[in-house]
Length: 374
Image (cartoon, rainbow, N blue to C red; front, top):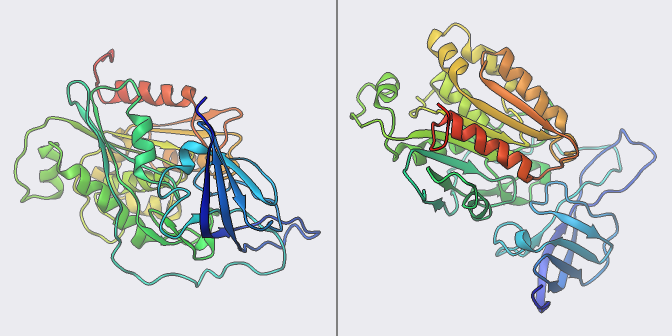
């Protein structure tokens, strides 16, 4: 174990969302507490964030963007790897952490939406293939995370034929955080079936993913179907998308745009997807999916032939298991016949080797990588 390091800090703005128990469990609202971090004690495994003053409430890791191991009123023990990554726990605005607080009778107003604007995406990290370049996969991080953290994990996977592209989402106000800014692929208020969908944000992120893939040697036959004047290119690599949590939601939205042939705003979707992976996520715009696909033979064909692999932990208390399970059911019922859903007992809102092993097997077989039986 490496030596423990001590770091005294200037006061940093710190936003907390606290959970409080009340007698009325049906009355819920979210709120924040602000504080200052005075010191960080870190080892090779954990960081202990020591607050200048105690907080009033119980801190948890819901939507924090990193894993809270233990917490008290003045100490937060988090995973040191995630805490050391810019954009997860640290940034120009200091440290941000969000959890739930139950009290009162009001909720965040659904009318509190940011106006449409251009989105500034963050840094993109690329992991080059160690063997023959047979596929390129864009992988999207979850809410509050960044591309760097996932690129380091993906680089360790036994998939030498894949080029991984790991972009970073724009920093924007997020309704579920009460408007506090965070890296997010789109705005989200809640995951209920009746919750509003940020189609502008989803379209912008799906287009960003497609633009990253469009520079790869792609399937010219598909390009000529959706963009008749596209220049001819050689078929060289297969293209895929994957993601975790909000990243998984974004790639599932991309999958529906691919099947439909268009984004939600009506513009053509320009790339041919060969594989989709979603971990601990959900399906946005599920209510309108059937209307998008029905009546189009081309859309039905693309939907039925697209391999999708969804994984979800039964112990997930951030994006609950029921949301992942329901998303898989909706995909199946709307024509995505090649969608597979796998549940993992005891798994929370994170990934484990058993899950990544299953992802590797899926991608190896689906993309025809070295070592596949096809």
